[in-house]
Image (cartoon, rainbow, N blue to C red; front, side, top):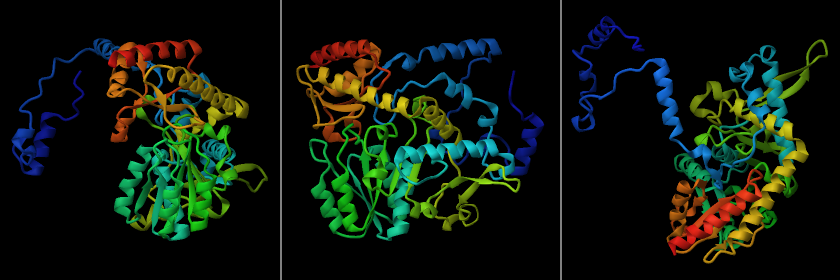
Length: 451
């Protein structure tokens, strides 16, 4: 069956309207060296044959069969079946921007519950209806700092996710607000002296700090937060949401804003997305937040209802003068996050986080007993740890893992050229003791083969 909607007469009418003689003439501006003279497609298939063919192609992708020790911003947590079943309901999948409150009470209530969960996780007073993902949430948080402080530039610790920093740097270069990154010390700890020196130069609106850092280390953020306070800057904490179940929350630490990526809360790897970004702020910053906030109220009959309490109308009508380009949210993904948190509850979330810490601690203890393998930093670690391997081994071990059935970790040379011989490995609550032991045994052989 051909799925070409244009007939020959349609094509002729289009070409006549454009004033060209052939389809090929439409591509005259494309250099001949960049054009294929023809596309050699095989004959069409019937639907059953096509399904069979596509299933064969899918079967060649073994990624879903690999035991995952890959973290670096995307984590392999168990997702209850109820999340897929509930989030797949038609009223959620087809839901759109809830402008008409009387028509979208269910979606508004779901977002309200999501906001409540984010506030409880972060210890801050207000959350919006979600963001695109973690990196853009961080940039929007820094813009909030600028609107509040008017300093003109930002500072970030080097242990904030390099992916996030790269995205923010792209925004910074075009916005006129420089982003300075204070590199961590060699052992992965925060360079407080470097941060203090940068802040002393003045003009800093916001400081971004990680919880945990990109190497898995949970830093003591209190000294850095105090330095930012003294300099008059606002503090943004970039958090793994599950880590907030074990450590002092951003609210307790005295941060002004907390942002993060919601992938650990009920979202699969899914080849990198989609995800959602969360954002929570102090009360006094609510009106400077991008996006929208759902609130609870009562109608004329005294019945509880939900409305869009705050939304930046200038995003719809002022275009280039708007405070943000965030005019929507990742509602379905945020809904999955809310469902995941609700199904597990506070105790379940804490157990997931604690079991991830225990699995990582065991993995680090076992791996560092291997010849030529050492952990970077003094910890504590959350759910991943950076390892220094013999020269040239990190990438080859990673590649050998694909053959052996493992996503063996993340070569840190992908982020920092000076860390070419380091590998970031992750363990969550999904990794059994048997899987950990088998991985350690394989890892020892793989490292030994490269020495």
